[in-house]
Image 1 (cartoon, rainbow, N blue to C red):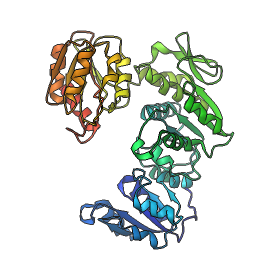
Image 2: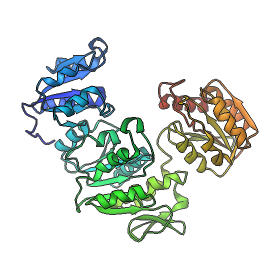
Image 3: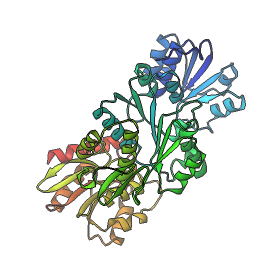
Length: 449
C-alpha cells in the first residue's frame, strides 16, 4: 500500500456508509485526514457508524443536513448509489468541492495494477472468468468491486505482484479522477439506470470514464459489434482490442469455424466451453482477451472455460435429476436477461418467471419463448407474464404462490431432456429481499427433489 500524503490534514466528508463508506473512512483516517461521516441511518441502528466513532472519526447520523457542506470540507467521498441530484451533492457541486467514489482512493494507494470491467450486462461473469483465468495462470489476482471485497480494502493488501480485477458500475466510474486500469473491458451497452443518469447519453458517458485516463500503454477491450461501444474507442488513447461474436478478427478475440481465436491464434474449440448461451460468448471473448494480454497461457484458459458453469444466480447450472437439468438465473431481473437465458437452450424449457410489477408489459419476451413448453408464474406480474405466454402459444400455464412451490410443479410437468429454468424477468422485491435470496430458495427446492 502506498502511504500517500495527499489527504493528510484535509477535512473530508464521507457521505453514506455501507461497506464502501466504512472502508473509505477508515483508509482516509489512516492516511491522516480529518474525516466526518454522514449517514441517514440513526446512530442507534448503525453499528458501522458506532465502530467508526470508536476510532475517533466524527459521525453525524439520522439525517443529511445540507448546511454541513458549509463547514469547510475539501473533498466529498460519496457512496456510489447516491445520485448527483441529491441535495447534499448539489450543494457540494455549488461550492466547488471535489466529489469522488471509493474506487479512486483504492487506485491511489494500490501497488497493484487494475483490470477494470464495466458494461450493462455480463460484468460479473466476465470479472469472474478473468479472475479464474489469471488464478489458474499463476498471476496472483485479487478480486474487488461489486462482486467481491471493497476495492480500497483490497488495495491496502495488494502488492506489485498482484493484479486487481474489479467490476465497475457507472455510479462508481462517475466518481473517478486519476483512476486508470491497465486493462479496461466494456462488455456491451444498453439502456439502464436512466433514473440515476437521466439520459442514455449520460449513462454511456459514465461508462466511457473507464478509459478516460488510459494511454497507449494500456488496453481497452470492447465489443466490436456495438456502434456505441466502438464510438468510445475513438475517444480513447488506449490500444484497442476488439472482440466479436459475429465475425472473425485478425486482431482481437473472435470465433471462426467452431474455434475461439485471439489475435489469429486458435485458443480452443467452442464445443468444449461449458458455459451455455450465445450471450455468454461476449463475456468469454472479452475475458480471453484480458487474460492473454496479461500473459495467461492457453492451457489455463482452456481449463477454466471447460469447467466454469456460471456465477451464482446468473444462468447457474444446479444439477440434473431424471434427465431434467436445472438452471438458476435469479439475477435475470429484466426482460433482456430472460431473453438471453432462453436463447441459451435449444431443448424444451419449463420457465419459472414473475416478480415485482414495475408497470411494464412483457410482450418483448414472446419471440424468445419458442422453446418454452410450460410456464410457472408467481409474484405481482404473474398475470402479465401469463398473457404473453398465451400469446406465444404456450398451452401449459400454472400459477403458484412462490419460487419454492414452483420447483416441484415444474418437475411434474417436465420430461427427460427438458430444462427447468428460473429466469424471472422481474426484480424480487415483491416477495424476497434480494434476487440472491430468491435464487437460494430455488436451489434449496431443487436439492429437496
